[in-house]
Length: 469
Image (cartoon, rainbow, N blue to C red; front, side, top):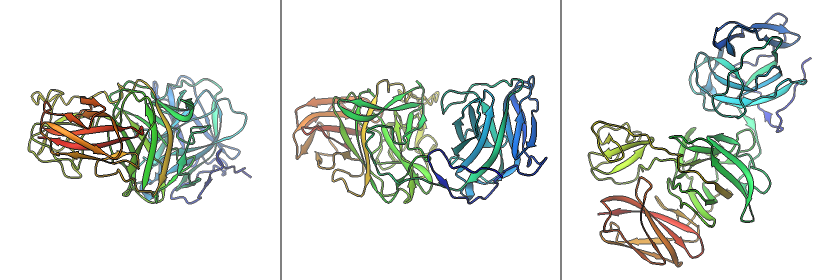
């Protein structure tokens, strides 16, 4: 009889399957699984049923990067398949598995695995990004030292093999509900990383989550709560994030799911750079789904377009990491976005030149060269008084702008003393600043939408949009 064990974190799966499971209990029955190399000679490897296991013996001289596959697995992600659990014993140098729909090169879930096993190990892979109708399953075998990325090639060595006890598609996992993260001793489950590292670290006598970019790319850096560790309850409709940004980057988002689709929540884009102290940012999550949420911190995103903003002809925004110039005086209406909305926007370069249409991709992560330290993340139903359509800041502070639209001078009133005023354009450039004042001169700025960030004497920060006429 096969020994059943639970996942390492004592996560109990709901054993409700739309497809599978495959347990390989019938003699001589591989249940339709085969294995071929995906690179090099593209030869076949030996697949047999052996004492309750699927045994895959890797054959030398048959290419590299074997794919263990079942063409008729009928995995239907739209029927609520979110995880694949695999129990195996790896007697090879393979250290990385990537799951994808059969015949594709997409990366819909990956995991590092131990090598030269003497005991069976259980791995649960998050495939919530997998969408579509019933298809087969590919399990690509490679070598890697990080849990994300494309992996390094594995070339079969004589005598190496993998024993698979079972493969189970799962609808859900039972994980603990956690709504407050303080990072006192660990990363507290923020381990799903994209072009980023996240470590528990002490900074200024505070226990923090220290985040850095690992790739200087034209994209971004993401750190998300692992769905294998815990979940945030979506009935909490506000988030409060206290952090210190020591980088020069000014773009930051919080992502969650609305209707099952990853969505960005207000406020988007701007936080203060080169901080010397910690500040609290508040987010309105009233539209996100109730139930399991796995929040994602998204840094260095250069996507300055706002669906709620008013744009003038000639104004430049960044949408989908692409420069776009407004050509109509109207904004895009959902689901359209500027880089696909040819009626209202034209792809341009950084100077606004449309011909030739460069469509310049901007270096979203290039300026996140120092760390972001996250002191705490709290999800609750406390409505921040400073939150508005495009405002964020400490829950006890508000500011007022007048006149808005402004021509020459933008005045700012606050219940607290003002220590610093900074104005950013929608490309994230600091275009005006002033210390210890209640106004800032904007006469030299071009017409359009800007964001003013106001630091207060109590070390909090509040931001609002204004229009320059």
